[in-house]
Image 1 (spheres, one colour):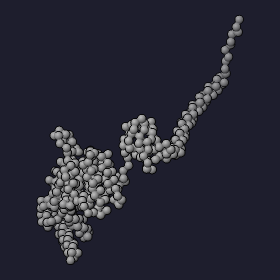
Image 2 (spheres, helix red, strand yellow; image 1 turned 180 degrees about the vertical axis):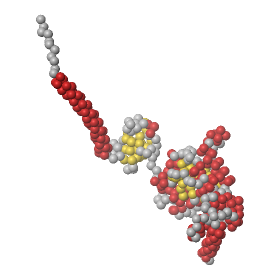
Image 3 (cartoon, helix red, strand yellow; image 1 turned 90 degrees about the vertical axis):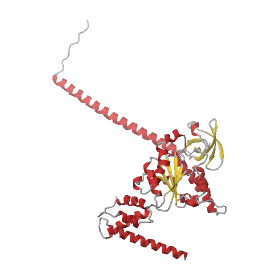
Length: 400
């Protein structure tokens, strides 16, 4: 017969001790589990850091790459390239690079030992070109320009409408104008019109003075023009504003110095970029000049500058509008006789009228006033007229 086990009674004191000891062990187990999780997380973080350091060491230990340009893709993972060291080579292409990326004139990285194509490099642009880009929209709007209603309407048709509503031209079946030339005396508002266009459109605005395209070394000016248009096409829709166009666009002469020939090379590249075989996409060109009479006829033909917009000196009504624009921002002590200002400013340009308002404010500041009076405007006219007569006399002295 099996021996029946007898129930063992545990004293009450020992039972309470075992219960408290069990709870103590449970708490310790939970604490150790939390510590384990923290240590595991730290181990994973350190492992990632070690992997990053190893990959960085491998990258630093890798041999440097030669820069090159693809001339032609031959198929079967082979291409003809021109390396930065000079020779043309037939090289292999890494399997990581797709055939769609292997286009002519694409910048590439070549392995130093095998010269295999291992990386596609971004296209380079001259820092001067990137410096031409206007990041922030100008504060000038069409409401800030007086006396140029017709010119504003024309520039809206030629520049704004094709950029904002290209479908209109597609429905009619015509190609929108590619560029406009603003011409007229100095200070009449040509640059203001370009600034207003930059504000009103969402296009990338690139501004350059034509003389900046004339470089010291042969071929540098043409390269700069080429990269300028490439940059504009990549960031289209965009507007290129070329100020003082006569600096490079003057008529070509048969007898010319080496410097003149370099300017002519730059002009020919500009002509090709504006209306060459390659489409320049949604890129508009605005030129500005004070001397349209000396510009080369090839530059003025349709297809390059389709619309020539004259920006003349303001007439009486135009001067009144310009004064109204500038007066609305001034702190005036009394009602200003605008008719007197208009008659007094005969033959004044928009820039001259702005100067009158600034000088009137300076006279108020000299007398420690915060408001401008009619007397200040009279003093401003007297000062500007005196300066004009002095300049005229200096010009006569030079000729004498």
